[in-house]
Length: 113
Image 1 (cartoon, rainbow, N blue to C red):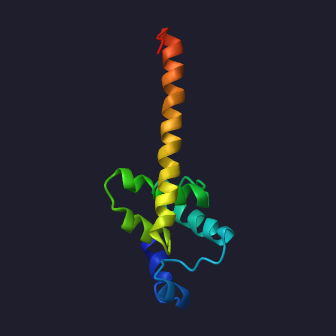
Image 2 (image 1 turned 135 degrees about the vertical axis):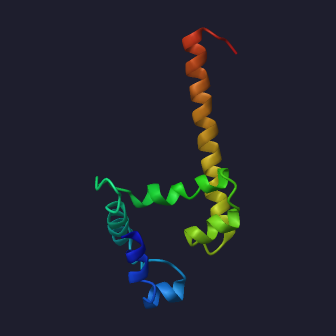
Image 3 (image 1 turned 30 degrees about the vertical axis):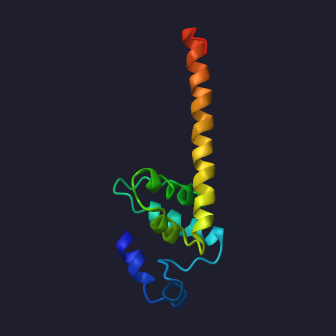
């Protein structure tokens, strides 16, 4: 079913001109597409994939060895600096979260820095 969706739009003018899989006119329309894709699960359990969550998931590719140039293209960024900016924010967020976790564990086990 997911492959059918991709084939459905393969010759759509906006998709061809923009080199994208789906013609995206707005976040609302993107969320609609994501819901349609999410409904393709084998167990038929429906779930929502908010656009921002789907978008941010692409940054996980960086930590799995996908080159930043590829991630930038997947996200449709015109300039790789945009991708680098968000990747830095993601790294800082992970670092901040780990600091909070470390403090919580230290408090739990009575460890002082």
